[in-house]
Image 1: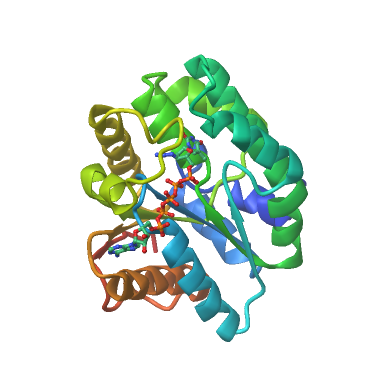
Image 2: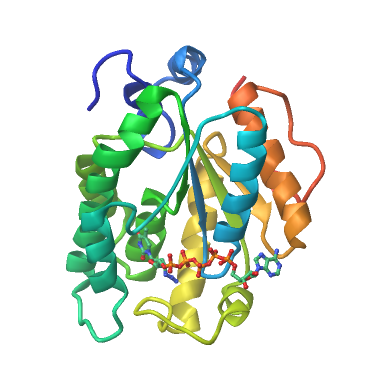
Length: 253
Ligand code: Z5A
């Protein structure tokens, strides 16, 4: 785990892995947190994460934030090589090996990109992070949440997002948005992708302080307004989300 007083240590006390940390202590730690923040975008295939990340990056830069955009799996030279293996439809991977490879790429990304950016006070926008492993490997593959959390606690040193934006969408609609190319995970049946969506919704319901759930089926500009409101509420403490696609977020205040 990080050094006392550094952003990653404070961030690591948020959310699912922070079970056991009293709410009052979590609130106090958030107040001490610098301007740096880790915001993860999650959702099923084709939910609109990349689209919304680009829009949010522009808006935050316009407001004067340093923004670092990265993705999973990938975002580092090693991570991109691991990504090629993970997404290759010709590769036959055991589910546990798959979970470990996602975690390995994540460990590299945290050390080389995310942690340094947070230490500079940047806002890091990550296209998928560990909740994808909990949903896809834990839920979709059936490995269960506990083992996947354990591996990822080791991989990330306990670094959790300050906010997870879950773009919630029926997987049938998401897969239909770009049916032309399918990677090793996208080719899984609809039942798999429905389990993933259910797992994401369950994670969000269990940790409303860390998640903002936005209706991914709404038009992109409405989704963007909902995302921005949730992000500003977290970054600037600007109050409840206003306008845009429906956002479900509850805060401990
Ligand atoms: N995976 C995992 O199993 N475990 C893990 O720990 C991690 C990942 C980190 C990564 O693939 C795969 O790895 C992913 C999960 C798994 N596999 N699946 N399934 P990826 O990075 O290549 O794919 P992705 O993350 O699923 O992203 P994507 O396919 O690029 O989708 P997206 O970024 O969410 O959507 P988009 O590219 O912004 O939009 C898709 C299309 O929809 C595009 O034509 C848009 O113009 C359109 N769009 C966007 N928004 C809208 C709205 N609101 N309405 C209508 N149309 C829209």
